[in-house]
Image 1 (spheres, one colour):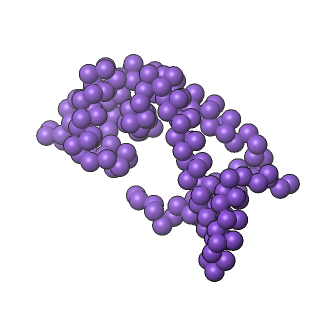
Image 2: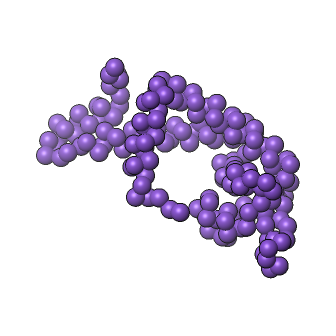
Length: 166
C-alpha cells in the first residue's frame, strides 16, 4: 500500500525541478524525521503536562524510576543519563526537591557523595506520566502494523548508531 503524497513530496519535487543535479534522497527521509520529531515533542509535552510535569522534569524522574529500587542515582549518573551539564542537573534537582518529587541523601557507598532519590510523590507523578505517554505514542503508531513498527525501529536504530553515546 502506498501512502498519500505529503508536503515533503512537494518539496522534493520542487528541488528536483530546480536542481536536477542533486540527489535529494536524504530529504525524503530526514525532512520527515524532522517534522515527525516536532509532532512527537508536542505529544510528549502534552502527556507530561497532564501530570504536572515539564519534559526536563520527566527526564530526571524517569531516570530515577528506571534505576529500580531504591530509585536513587548519583548526580553524575543523572547527568550521564539526561545529557545535561552538572550545573544544570544541580538546578533541576533543587527544583524537583522543592516540589517534593526527589530528595538528596548521603551515599552509603561514598561518605562524601550524595544520592538523588525519587520520593513517593515523584514516583506517582512519573508513573502516571509514562502511562499517559505510552497511550499517546501508541496513537501515533496506530497506522503501522507491528511488523512495520519493528522495521521502522530497526531502521532508526541503525540511523542513530553514529550518534550513540554510552
